[in-house]
Amino acid sequence: MVNDLIFPDILLYLLDMVGVIACAIAGTLLAQHKGFDIAGCILVSMVNAIGGGTLRDMALDRHPLFWMTDLNYVIVITATSLTLQVFFHLYHKIDNALRFFDAIGLAAFSVIGFKVALHQDISPLIAIMMGVWTAIIGGLLRDIICNEIPLVLQREIYITASIAGSVTYLLLDYLGLNPGLNEFIMLGVIFAVRMLAVKFDWHLPSIRLVD
Amino acid sequence: MVNDLIFPDILLYLLDMVGVIACAIAGTLLAQHKGFDIAGCILVSMVNAIGGGTLRDMALDRHPLFWMTDLNYVIVITATSLTLQVFFHLYHKIDNALRFFDAIGLAAFSVIGFKVALHQDISPLIAIMMGVWTAIIGGLLRDIICNEIPLVLQREIYITASIAGSVTYLLLDYLGLNPGLNEFIMLGVIFAVRMLAVKFDWHLPSIRLVD
Amino acid sequence: MVNDLIFPDILLYLLDMVGVIACAIAGTLLAQHKGFDIAGCILVSMVNAIGGGTLRDMALDRHPLFWMTDLNYVIVITATSLTLQVFFHLYHKIDNALRFFDAIGLAAFSVIGFKVALHQDISPLIAIMMGVWTAIIGGLLRDIICNEIPLVLQREIYITASIAGSVTYLLLDYLGLNPGLNEFIMLGVIFAVRMLAVKFDWHLPSIRLVD
Image (cartoon, rainbow over all chains, first blue to last red):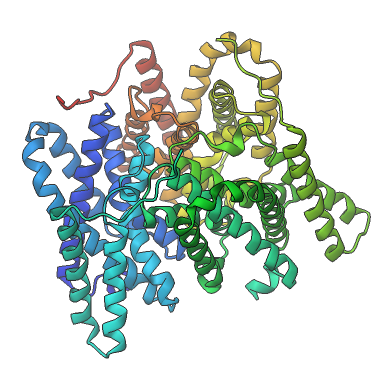
């Protein structure tokens, strides 16, 4: 039943796994850069990939946590991290592809977090926050563990893309659109906003204090 | 019912909102200083203002979380952070007032956390910890996200003020004082200790290790 | 009943307390080094000693948290941290003993986390992770709060020792060994792996990226 609510169809599940793999890669790369050992790199890649969903489920009191009943998550992350560590010299080739998969992950994680919250009869405002939460908390925790200023809070359009997708969903839902179709439009909007932000170097302004 | 337990009266709720606004301001100022974008500043201000209460509710298994049923929190924090970012040049005027509102927040958060825990039939020792937890974890998480050494653990009387208030409450409760009145004495004690610490530069000793 | 599940016998409870004391010492030493005040040092020592178990119980939805019903934890940690801060000049004598007690703590925490998860009818893979989680998350949080790169992810055999113990347990359990005896073998394996790693300076390889 839990799986019912989260993954109504196989496509969203596959996109979710793409996002998990992208996050596992990003986590492993940063952890390697910090000189962490093999086990440390796997741990950071797990935090990156399932940390956001874990805190979301704990905040929404959904137990058992999604990765405790579906072992694919832990297995896929461990396999990804180990593979990357063994073939680390592929790094430069991976770098470009990573942005593409990362955007898929951002979209899939946002849709899943948003849907899970909506299913709990929660205010749409909180559902939007849970979409953002699921999508970015993993990367935030990764940067905290690696003692870096969190990337998602700085110069990249992550939070905005996730919110844009959720707001689009709510608007179309209000107009009576079929939820299944709406979900894919939401996925597309987030993916498009993120990829356009990468391509044209869009970023939200940051108001620096003088002195 | 949840609101019943947490906010028996409108005054404590108002003081709580004052604390939330003070935390949102403190979070936004630090996030701006770190060069985070608009969305990043809002996120840090949320963590600062409701992070402690969120972790307290998760630890005490109180669901849904308080800000999921009362949207005022999210709205007030977002409005505060956005307003501050637009009129950031008021910073220097804000700075002095901030210590005053921050002390109100410390007192209100401590009372709320302490009461919530007492209502769950928990040991007074744990209730004291939950008061401290609610009052300081938000600022702790803010500093962690911004990659700073946590301020509340260093040279400021925060934890001590919160404990002093809780211990006063327990003593007066033992002597048979009316809980409603006792609560306001607790608020006053925490506020007074904190403001006196600021005014006379009190701080707990820190025993540095000689290399 | 909760205590029944976690501590079937007094020896494991005593070893757990040894681990708690070792973690409280480690947390206090790092916090002192960072110049935190007395209350800050106590807070860091609590996070170090009971942070991992707290997050484990929250993830497994076990309420109330173990330290809320058994006040010994909070009392022992506070007493340890205060004692150490008062007699801090014993530091150099403590340092060597600390590795020994720390290894006991690693073993006891891993066994407790692993058992708690197995009792919840969870996949053995997740139980192994919960053992690691309980044993290392406290130290991870301590380093995050103190703004240090986490030690357990770097050059020390912690995660590996915990996994080795859990895997040994599962293998012997499959062969039909008595659970009580098996538990002590698991304790011994983790302790031995960790102490050997300290003695012979074993560490997992870390694959650094060439710039």
